[in-house]
Image (cartoon, rainbow, N blue to C red; front, side, top):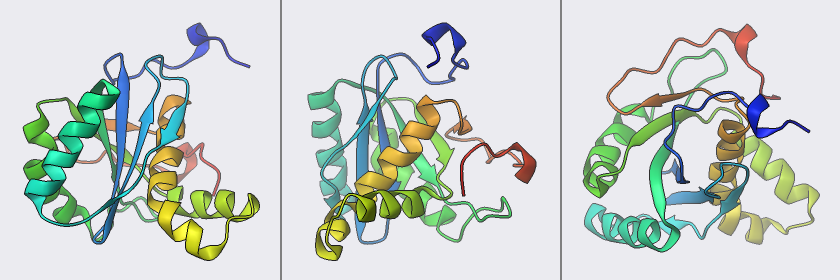
Length: 171
């Protein structure tokens, strides 16, 4: 087990992190504890209007004492950005930026696969997995961030180049 002194320095501010796994139908949510040691899935949001989503995220941020937001950035195995990048940028500008919290992006590659595997291994039925998958995916990449195994970059910067040999995440 690593001690807090052994962990890599995070670019994220101290305090609770809200992780968001954006999707066209649902938004998966997870939060960290204030000490950045664990992530916990929250109930996922059904997509509706950006105004309703902003209101919901504002309430969730206030209830959980959120100090920063990390949105999953879609990446292909090759390291190239996924096709949803432009839609995510538009949504983040409309829904996350107005919360007036620092916003970051993180490579969410493999997070859905890992979440699906975890839910299947715990015996969840397919219908139940569907109601949890997006928030468990947000929790997966949040755990990777907290462990120092996932790069994070600030909103407004292009995703960094990822060398496949640098990946520490399991496929």
